[in-house]
Length: 390
Image (cartoon, rainbow, N blue to C red; front, side, top):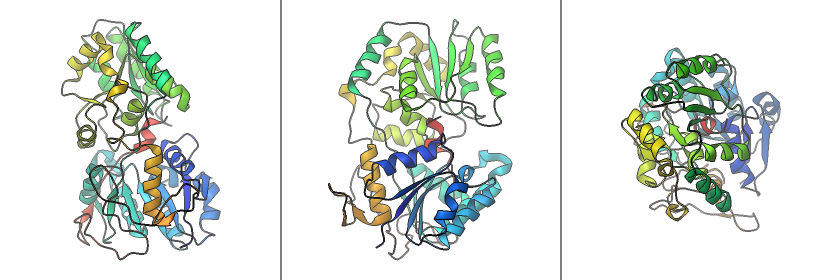
């Protein structure tokens, strides 16, 4: 089979593109392209080799319909496989109908569809109408451990105290949870600084002064750090007193993984995706039912929000290298070797493998993986890596 192309589509700072780039850079035997959809489309519709896309409508077009049309144009000339991010869900509001139609079109066009959690696969089944019987497989988002010396030093500094801060990581937009965190600090003695480790999403810059005014009303402060590259984001995540993930609009969240990759054990509000992650890696996050009380306790005991290096279990969370290898098996049907040549193989199923039950390009389509009937609806997800890398 012709070697597949890995296309890393989107604006330079978008988390989905960055996630795709990280996987591509760990797949040296694969050709790759990186750029915005406008930059890449001429090349994507000119070739005939298979291509793998990381798709969210926001980076493939000015509207959901245009985003889906771009993928359909690519699929008309070459086989497409897709990892879906930011799957539509009812909390999208007025955009829900257009987005679910767009995602249905992308699923129709793809030979292999990947999501990053079982809860997303269920949302896809429930919410996105699609007549195709393409299988949907689950490959969890990768989480790499922190650099050991930096990790130890950051934990040592945390034990020394300092001015209290509470951090929310990722783009700033309605539903991300910054307002819930500010509200939860109402009865906490101040001042506490609430930090957005990221920039405001385009069009939502007005949230920054509004959240600061809300925080000041309770004797606290709010500040957005702006875009942070990988190294700066890790440093910022390790300097925060208490890390929090409390969105009202949830998907396979890159934010929680980014906290964990910085050595932090974030406070996380309930959601099926977070519960799924906690079941796989209970040492990596703290599920909470009462944000107010949990924040107050964590500010009194910041070390409870750190992962001890001895607790890290690589078998519980896939590394970027492992996730890249799994992705390559999905899209190329071969396992990478030391020299990058690869050999045809199917991934091994089993506990923790995250690779059982795939249908490879060229194999007969089957609903055996998902239990999805040919005319059953499919469903929803929100920006995975895109949340956590702004």
